[in-house]
Image (tube, rainbow, N blue to C red; front, side, top):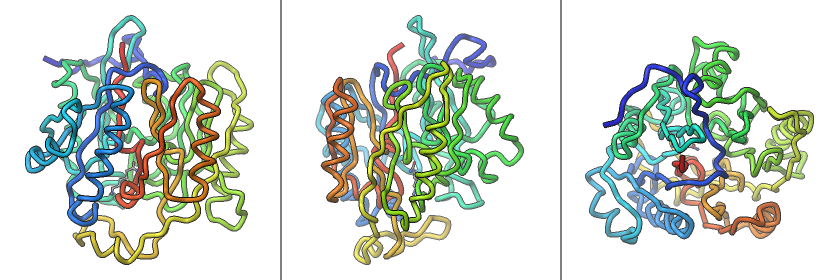
Length: 364
Ligand code: KQY
């Protein structure tokens, strides 16, 4: 039985560890909705299988799946990947899933944030989202982990931590009025301190151009280890991404972390603009209340949306001439990991990437 605790992680000595610390397993959710995933979600499902397989070289994977797709997911995934029935509205485990916290003495609990599908009725990406909102509670029950219910809307992809007291985020997302209109920046910082155990914030202005999440940090910048941040970059001063990445670079270069260290920034050049084709657009069902996929729209493609797992890094690739360089630089900066590229256009077509569809459960 998983209890819902009345205290906060901070009061109980729990904090959110960095993604690069040791995991028990990775959680994912199976894609199926035809108003987000083209061609009945079949191409996306094949890509999710590839991502799950890549991760499973490094650690166990559990896939949550709606009842209607249980048999299909079970058949498409190898038997070493656990498949559990878990009703959901879509497959973004990073964002609707829990944030796990640890106490450094073997204890693991989780934080259950409010979820409103990236903006609720003011620019949210689909309606309803009530099943997604229950995912953390279901994970808590399956794993018998006690749960904290946090008093704020937050998606996991909107924060990164270094595990040593620093939290990286963007104003574009966390201060968007469609998440927590009644909370000030200071209120948000206080809740994040209480529920993730951090003590220091690095606020970037904005995320990736055209990112439908309102600028999640996990698409533009992430910690590779304490004091080292990878940043999505472009050398093209005319690209709408340039001022965003330049501002982030300048902010990070000036920033100190919770321990007073300066931040080293490694630039990872973005792929050339990735555009939705007419064929891709036509494969998506049109439904009121769901963000349409229009031919000609530029997607928020970034190599930074990678996932760190035990001894590995699973990185999106785009069949682009920048792919090889991105993988090479990440491998150089993470010699302790094996960097694996997975072609990820099909995930990008749904609005996110590998980091957005995964959630780490740390070892206590
Ligand atoms: O974290 C993400 N990038 C998720 C995007 C959600 C897209 C829903 N269509």
